Image (cartoon, rainbow, N blue to C red; front, side, top):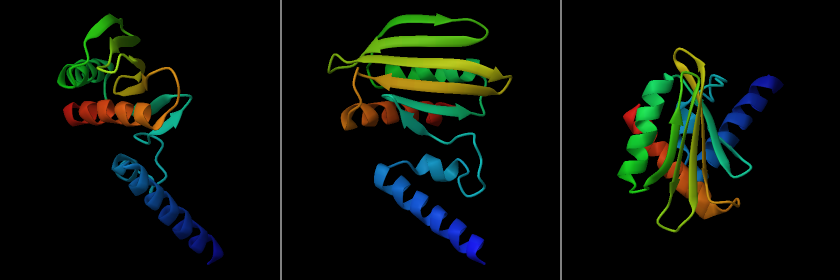
Length: 136
């Protein structure tokens, strides 16, 4: 029974942290089931997630997200294994979206905004990701 209480406590703690951080996707992504895909993490000024989506679909969603947020693309490159979009935010912060194909329908997504880790940069990266997921 102790293990069940530990699991319940951990899930409650994660759910509370997600709500505080505004990361409802983490809950939907399968934390309760222990799923690895769709779980957003943020490290070294980069939002990181692996999504069950093809590289082409993620690429289209990334381009659409930047256009929708009025972030002009300054550089783009894509091949069969990866894609990289670079832009400049309204605050003149560099925006980089790196996509890496992990399988036919599995793509690693990395989004960084700015040079340093800050709450504003995390919020901006999350907004881009939210726009992408709406289109995927």
